[in-house]
Length: 533
Image 1 (tube, rainbow, N blue to C red):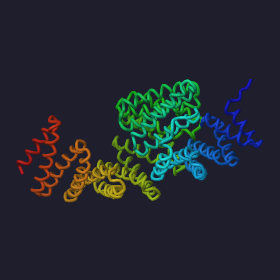
Image 2 (image 1 turned 180 degrees about the vertical axis):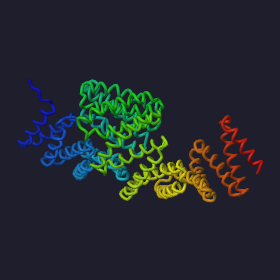
Image 3 (image 1 turned 90 degrees about the vertical axis):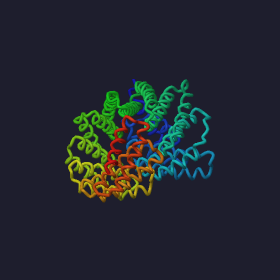
Image 4 (image 1 turned 135 degrees about the vertical axis):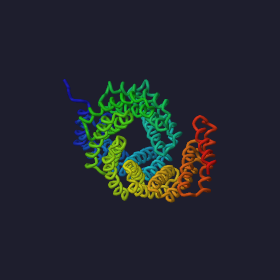
């Protein structure tokens, strides 16, 4: 009786083919193995080594495909630098082939550009990633949904990857369109290849659900995730090694969705299901699955913080932090930011539970590390550093240490001044909030003239934001004008006080029209103040 598993048989087969110089046969076997192998297989590392050997024995398009597959394998192990080199080598060969025959080689060139774009995104090199996505989209957007089943399968997979690229470019309509077109193609395999049909449909549904979740279309996202979960459970029953990881992914996505919907019990159920699966997978191959496990632990920490189960929140935040610290020691370029994110989450929890000194220590450690990282990649780490400055300032306010809060906020404002030059629409809200925050700190320090300056700046920026969404920002503007009026009273500036309160009154009257129950009392209060001036 033959007890050798199918992957082992194929590994033995390809090893013999290479030894006998049957390189093209080995190439075909390599692609067959790649379709079925996962990091859970004991032969995974051996398969990578075979791929490294095979890439030096074949040429042109075959070599490109092996390099792309190797890039995927290293990517699955979060070895992004090696993965990038494989994709770059594939791109160099594929560009040469494309120049010789554009009609034949445009598809593979587009795929190579997409894969390299994904790696640059993982490495947080967003400008380079976006350029590669755009180049790929120009090549692949008009790809035709026709041909042999093998070609159709490739087109469907490509459309999902195109949807991911559009999602990264914040192009919602084109992302949805590509996911739906991919799903339509996968449906055509329902009778011919059931496993491909199920895997493809669940993949497209999960990706579309993630996009809709990000756009806060929770009801639609929920239906898609539940469909994907049902399908993936069916797939995992037939092939757990290949599909359990995707069951865990969809449970995590549902957990996050339910958390956003404030359905905490449902969120906990799905996150604990994901935790159970991912803990089991980590025991088999920690390199491939440990980071995924930390994402689930991180989400459980967040959920338990919302539920005010602070001990449980700390336990899961600490577990994620410990794992990410180990990952960051081994590969800081990839995992250091994940570690800092976990550190910040723990600091948030300590701040929320009045453990301010512990929170202060964590945030100071984060700032020190971010200040070093900024020199390596300003685009990525400037906004993250600004976020931590804001959290630390909040801690100092709770400790009534207003001088340190002021100094931290001045540093934060410097960062936002730089960020606003790069992307005003993205960072204007955060700048306006920081200006409002520091004005309050200066008021606590009795420096009302400085508070006035930052309040006026904050009001101006919120007015700019209100030009695009008045309903969202008008309540903030009303509060800021009221605070400005109180500040002018402290400065004994009667005319300016009247000006500020009149503006606060106008804003509250406008708000009163839509919500009289909430705002009538504010209108009457400000009218009373103005009568006494």
